[in-house]
Length: 292
Image (tube, rainbow, N blue to C red; front, side, top):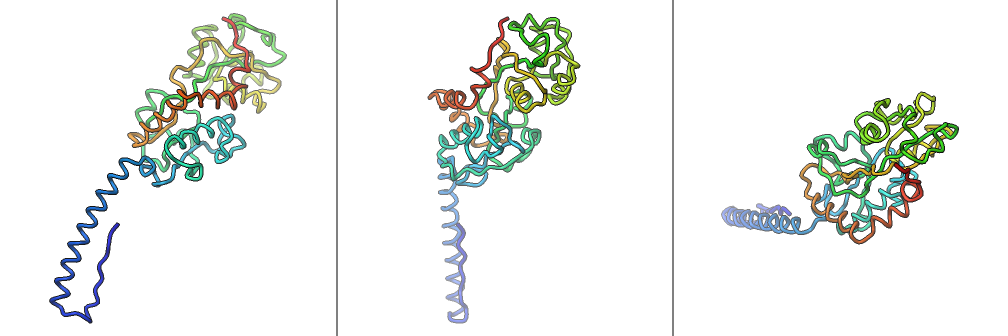
């Protein structure tokens, strides 16, 4: 804190005023230096003072924020898996729910290089080496699997094994884990699409027999009727994303180690599993896993 000395020269002798001014200036500089040192010391010990807005934790998510991560696009409610995880991490860091400030970002902007106006961002970011060049990641709070979507009237609608799909026309999004899995385990000849929206449209239009993508996205496609009269055939065996989804932080953030430890602790004490059981059962245990 800076102190400003003010003197009324009309009521004191100039020589005394000059002396007092010099002393006051010296005292001010000394106090300012001491305060800065104390503040830095306090900041280094108190993670709540290391944030974008000291004393507050600014958390970003998507615009809009999709389910099951956030229910009804209202992250402040704490309803939905990612919203619940975010508040659990905030608690581990020493923040009350009232200390959390939510903001919104585009997906690509969040993982681009450059300064950020938030402390961490949670919106289903897969952890990759390429993204680590621009941002920091916590350890994983969810490891998604891959699943298959087919039309309910498809001749493959009753398939129970991965091998049952060998004669199907299979579509995937290029450059994804689903692409790698389908090529290695279903068939070599697969159709590729630039994004999940185009993939869903292809299945909806009957251009392909089945699509493979992340389980969360599969369930969302069916529930939102991006593919009409469709169903999730099942989760694919041995298709879990080993790297998982992580909380994104600005590159070299002072909070990275603390947020990572918070996620690790939440995994260790069973909180992550409890939240997954509450919010993600329809994407995990409630879904059949196909046989090989």
